Amino acid sequence: MKKVPRPLTVQGAFQTTDQHSDSIKPAKFQGTDNPRYLRVIPALLTRPRRREDVDSIAGCSNGPDLVSALRGLGLEIPCEKIKFLDRDGNTCRPGVYSFTEGDRRKVWAWQARMRKGGAP
Image (cartoon, rainbow, N blue to C red):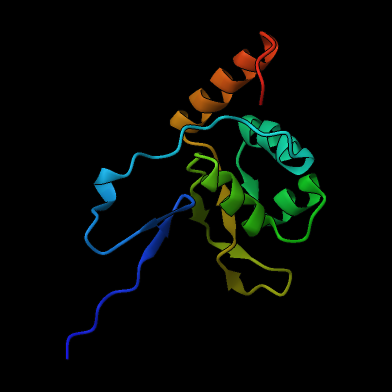
C-alpha cells in the first residue's frame, strides 16, 4: 500500500499533496505591532544577529520561534550556520539570522507606509 504524504503547512495555509509549492504566493509583509518583533526588526536591519542576540534583543528565550513567526508574516530571514569555537575550544555551529535584500525592501516599504499614517 502506497503511503500518502501528509499535508504541509505553508505560511498559515494548508497545502495538500495535489498543490504545488510554486502555486502559493509568498505572503506579503504587512507589518506588525508586536513589541518583540518591533525590537528585532531594526536590529536585523542593522546587521546579522546570532540566536542568542535575538533572544536578548526581543526579551524572550525562544528566538527561533520568534523568527519563525516573522517568516510566517512574509519575511525570509535565512539562518546561516557558522563555524565557531565555544569557550572550551570545541567547534560548534551557531545560527546567524539576517535579512535578505527582499526582506529589507519589504520592511522599508512597511515603515514608509507607517510614516504616512497607515495601519500595521
